[in-house]
Image (cartoon, rainbow, N blue to C red; front, side, top):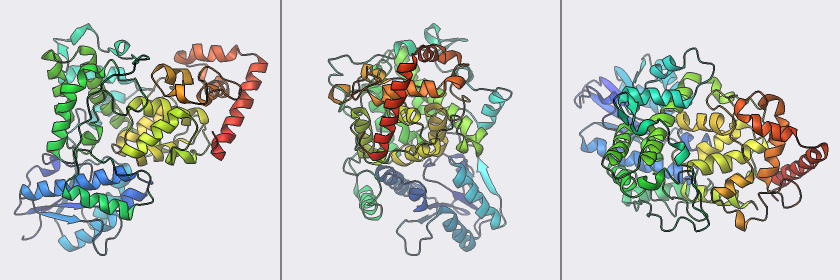
Length: 516
């Protein structure tokens, strides 16, 4: 190759041959740059499933780039003399390759963007950022929506996008006569359980993925989780197959049971597509189109199609907008002044609380938990316990295969921990252990009783729920959506308050000593 015109930087969550950074790409003058970096697995203590997924998907994408005839400079994690970080590797490559331009699609992590930007500018160039066409909404459009609003609410934003992109619309009205079918989508399985659930779409590791698994098991042996069950899609073809499997087999019952849980059933009727979407193996547009097409063809009810589309077109776009309009300060928010440390057993699952043991063990085994398990089990307990939100954020970013900071951070600090003071969610999502029991949690096999708030058998969720309301009574009293819960707490007698406080203190001590 003669003088290099453009170096296109591709990160591990930008695995799209049609990305905007490739517009005008000329193999005779341009090249692609990719690098694996240990720092991306150690700046938080990343789980083995997450590390393996990113590396396997990157290496398969490198093959796709080469098959497409695009010159590629790829730095493997185990290459001799590897410098350890993306920034250091890019700095060395810029010195060697001397490109005239450096271009990349908008990244998904503030820290990574700032570090690469500094390196490129240090080489006397500007890092040119291209819009990420994977999304329905640009950050500028979200900023325009948010301008002048003290609080942001998903519902209004979601309706705007439905109208703008003509999704599930009949003329200027929503299909089915309403925008939101949440009221139809909160069923539990009942005592009989879910029955036969369609099997998860799995993809046995090929030779390239097996190389990655061996590397991760050797190099990151001390990191949480295992790779025995690794079967995630790592190519676009596999991701498309997983999408079709969801549309055909799970979408029809997705809506009805999207909030349900059941012991020993990690997959249920969820899509399992978030990792493929976040790595850009799938386009959000094609996923939404597939769900809407299934509804219009009579293969899925409106409550399932709308509920799923709201997760992609609504929530996913919403949290991205919040991330990029609020960073970098958003990361430090702690509106409820939470100061406890994350329990050590969040990294092992070794606890006597059956629901937490099940969800954490599942998470470490598969790198996966569905949204209710994240929000109303692991997230809820951390919120009620008063864990520093930054520690909760680091755990979620580390253990889930779909975790990229733009989507994980607002979901954790805003939705789960209410650390942003209500910017993105209208109330803290708090409940007693009875909610977990009602939605199918493994309470029958637990030593604690979800209906009890005091005494030795009191469910820690239930005790800490009441302690949370009493601790934050002054702040929550002005929140209309919390009025009834706060009123119930205020009615407690002095004796009941003292008993709750004593039991809560005992639970906190047990959590710290690993005996809860």
